[in-house]
Length: 449
Image (tube, rainbow, N blue to C red; front, side, top):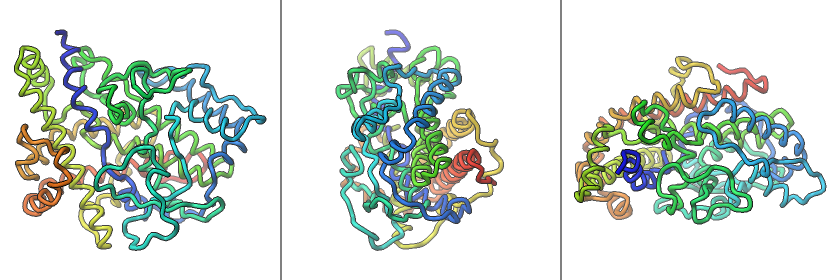
């Protein structure tokens, strides 16, 4: 079997389990932005249905989306051109429903994308301030066991803090925006297709796996890897950041401040995903040579090592995410701060990065996360109970619901190394989130740092 086929065989198994990076982004974004003057000091905005924005700015949105597509074709490596039949063309005579559907098609989002009026409540708030709504009104994805989101409906015209809009939207792209968009996905849009072609990596038959190419970026694997497996370079995180970011700027400029903050949060999600080393590296705990070797052995009839690699990478990702989520949520509910909260708020490193630009996601965010991969993987091995991260016969994801308390107890004893490493990653998460927002705000004349 060719080397490319060997790599694809591995990642078809691995990547569907890693489609989400940080669990719930919103609690972390509340901490990252709550002391940023441009957010904390911003005036309340009025909640606005998406259809109102689309109707009012239809022609401007059409121009913006065309400009985005033109620049993506020119500047983004591996870009899949949008079919011309999906262009958003202004038509004041059509219904709101038709305009809404055309907008989703032009962005090449799932037709099941909700974009409802809501906020996700900061877990530091003991009571839900408003009418609680179920996740299925906000998300097209069935919530996982132990989901931590609490949603409150917004009414058109209701005043809401930009912090709440921004932080809520930072989690939203995981609610089904990017599912089944490839030609070989069972539930892919048809008539016309979206133009992304076949799914470049992962298992196209697994719905959550179809999200991965929009939330991962393997930009720094090296020339040998790219030669052997060029399809892994086809990721669309940069496209989503451009799309949502451009719409945020347009919304702010045209007096639709609610959607400015909302689209900004959607863009930030994809930036934040790439601060997670397991989303910027194909396998942080393994060399290319080792990956090739275990795949070759599997093809020769000894698949145990390949399956072990898949399980271990998955387990370590889940353990890191579960530790981070539990820590952030528990501290929020207790209204206390610790090293992770301090890291998220820390603005001391924001200025050491280059200014926001078109290559920031790839050359700054993803490069940093890729470089942090081996140390992060090692910290998980040292900081978590061995049962969860070194036993290839144990599948953490399959047992998470029953073994979560055991993991939490084990972490109490062994957490220091992992906590220190995680704090550094969340420092990157906060800095890149703020720098991205500053870059967007600068385009509408709101001063950055």
